[in-house]
Structure formats: C-alpha cells, structure tokens
Length: 205
Image 1 (tube, one colour):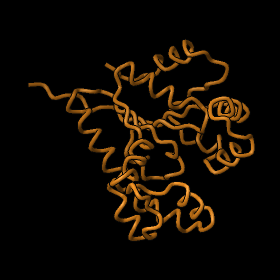
Image 2 (spheres, one colour):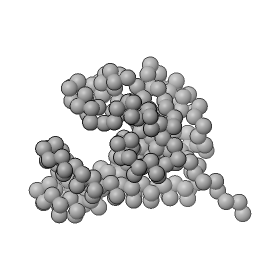
Image 3 (tube, one colour):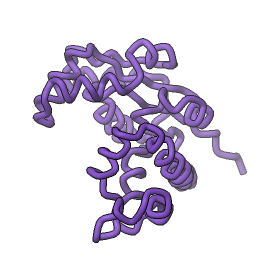
Image 4 (cartoon, helix red, strand yellow):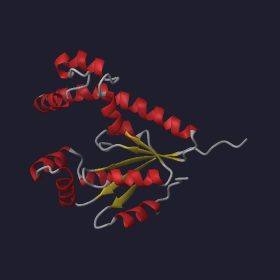
C-alpha cells in the first residue's frame, strides 16, 4: 500500500481589496482545500463560541451580547482606546483559530486533498505563528489606490476609513518580502486572474 504524498500547505494573504478571497475561491475550485482563518475567528466569537467564556472572564460580561456572542462594536472601541487589550484578545482567539484550522486541515488530508490553502489576512503580521505552519506564502498584491477603489465600490466605506485599515496592516513591501509566490492582481479580469492561479506550481487535484 503506497502512502499519500505530504500535502502542500499554502498561506494565502494580501491586503484588503487585493483580491485574496477571490484567489482563494479559485484555488478551491481547482481542488485545493480552503481553510478560512477569519471565518474561524468569527465562529469562535459567535454566540456560544469557544472563545466566549474566556472573553467574558477577561473583559467582563458587558462585552457579551444577550445572544451570547462577543459584542464586536464594544470590543472594537475598547481595543482602539486600550492597545494592550488587543494582545489580550488575540491571546484568547488565536490559539482557538489555530486549533480549528489544524482540525480542518486533518479533515481535508483524510479526504485526499493534496493542497491546503490557509486564508490568513494578517499572516505576515502574525510573525512565526503562521509561517511555521505553511510551506509557501502566496501574496495577492495590487496598488494601494486599487485597494481603495475596490473596497469603496464593494463596501461603501470612505477613503479615510479604508486608508486607516490599510495602515494598520503590514505594508506592501513587508508582504512582498515574506512571499514565496506573488500574484499581481492589477488590471486583470477574472479569466486572466484564474489563468494566473492555474499557472502556479500547485497540485490541486
């Protein structure tokens, strides 16, 4: 009986409006298993999620809604006013996200997937935590003005709000320096972007 090849683990990242999620969906359509760290983070802080008891203990019950979820607006304002609170919140959420991501990865491997794509918006910002979990980092890159225009069209956010989000993330230079592969998603239609994705040396079947 021949053993299965070790699956390729890819860390997918990119700034807001870069097209990262679209690339992730394309990789998934070509046979990769997609593991969404943001979706996991939302689930552990949703009503009765696994992070809720620790959040209530650390920050107080006023940060939990009547439905049993983390009060995102209150927490966002609190973290903005008290920077150390951000580290405290991440210390609760990140281990749970990693645990669930690894569970999903093992499930995907059991199903025979040869490529695992971990969609992690703040992969570069996380330092070694995610870098040690993946074999390659794929960065979806574009000009900052392109990011702003895409997000303004998609989310109706103001330029100032989008720029503040971008400034809180790693710079383009930092992301590109961490990349093993880069997709320059500038001026590409979906067909061209998909062709770019398919050209990557990734086993997806």
